[in-house]
View 1: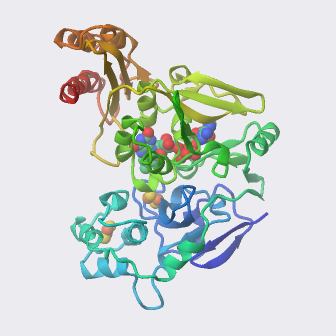
View 2 (view 1 turned 180 degrees about the vertical axis):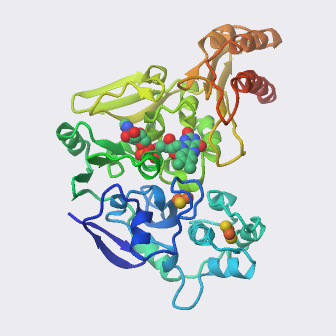
Length: 466
Ligand SMILES: Cc1cc2nc3c(=O)[nH]c(=O)nc-3n(C[C@H](O)[C@H](O)[C@H](O)COP(=O)(O)OP(=O)(O)OC[C@H]3O[C@@H](n4cnc5c(N)ncnc54)[C@H](O)[C@@H]3O)c2cc1C
Ligand code: FES
Ligand code: FES
């Protein structure tokens, strides 16, 4: 099969291109050089393009993504718009006009990326006020951001019924199945778990790709190559949210944006997740990154991992041999190592109910937003009617080879009155937690100090909440 998709309203058919190629690389090789490459690792947004159509929540929208992290083959069956597609003949699109009139472009290198992020924001369903997050994943070295932010702030709320609105009404952005080969490399995008297990039985060494925000960094920057790539993004069985009396079930293949939007429909969704999303990279990344991908990388600074550890979550793993559930604190076994067996994937993350009453997530990073953690912490606390600790959970990232819980500190609080004495005992236990290392983001001593500092911040916030 060839890779086929719609680009700026025209059908495209691609054959003979290595499946490790990113959508960005293909665009630029094919003459669509308006889309720029800055970093090739999801950091700058110069490569932003829009995925068009009706998402799983039924809403039609343009979703901005970093094309440097989209494997070309994942474009298959979908509709895309690049900066070349937004102007109409010689008439600039309103977002381009806003950037020009307000002086939001100087050298212009970042401008196509900003245009695409603004373009997607312009057509966001129900937009009444601008979302500053819309351009948070785009970097500019020249303009100082003010004129660009003004362009965002000045977007007309009334969107005319233009060709893009009409396009939204007819497009479907759901991923389509694909079997593609070029040279010695293959790309397979199954649409059922049964098909996935069949592919993995034939190719146990295959590399799984969900949102690609980790995998494609390796492919682009470290020239990672694998004979077979298997894409998980068309597997509806890995997506979705459900809530029963006992637990929340979050599809591991859901993107973080899908979870963020989906959980908004529930009044009693875990607050920790709500606190996590805005601090997890940028909208451009969250539109692709999945929850399962974040856990499977087992990064010691993976933010979802420690939040879910504090919520006592478990993972449901599936393979052709059946399924099993594991508490998340048993899932991580070492630096970037998990209990996943060959042929096994994370299907769901289960969060038990009732949820703890007070939940807080803290992330220490060089920049307040759109940065990876130096240290991160999540705390959960429920007091009983006497003011004693019924549940206390503390989890940390960036202080050991994996994200970790703090069992000694948790035990020091359990059943105790939530007072200064208990909090001192917890802080003392936290002082012995983990095996922090020094790296360019922070020294071991700094990280150790942060463990206790973040707990002290939690005590202040918990006092306000109680
Ligand atoms: C610019 C940038 C900023 C980032 N910021 C953050 C941040 O703030 N916080 C943070 O925690 N992370 C961050 N990340 C890391 C990354 O975005 C996340 O880890 C993301 O959740 C990975 O999900 P994915 O779907 O893109 O994974 P992929 O890249 O597709 O896959 C990652 C790994 O997981 C495996 N995998 C994926 N899905 C499954 C599954 N269902 N079952 C089994 N294995 C699976 C893949 O085989 C691969 O080994 C950032 C990355 C970039 C590039
Ligand atoms: S080139 Fe920088 S985010 Fe893609
Ligand atoms: S205008 Fe030069 S990088 Fe933004």
